[in-house]
Length: 99
Image (cartoon, rainbow, N blue to C red; front, side):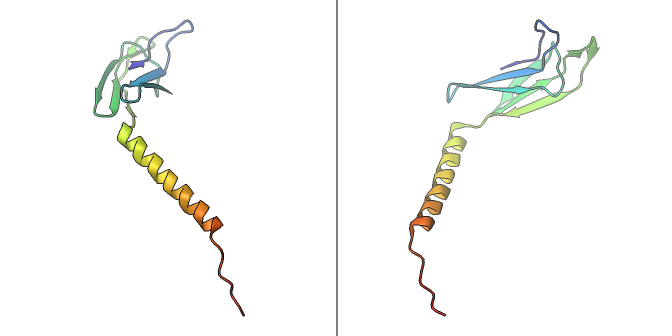
């Protein structure tokens, strides 16, 4: 996890989180750019708290959720099922209705 800090322009609000299960990185932004903030994680959540904004202390806490691999698998299976149902519905013959 990397968040906040100082770059060439000034204080940054960039957040970069590594998911070790999928070996992928995700990028986001802090609600307020700041430096010297604390970071921790619990389960699939990353917490960034405190820090300094323009030489004043910050009491802001940002929480980010990183999906677990099983969540991504369930999401993929659900999307696949929905697409399969839609495809099957389009391919099935419609009943002839006589009036």
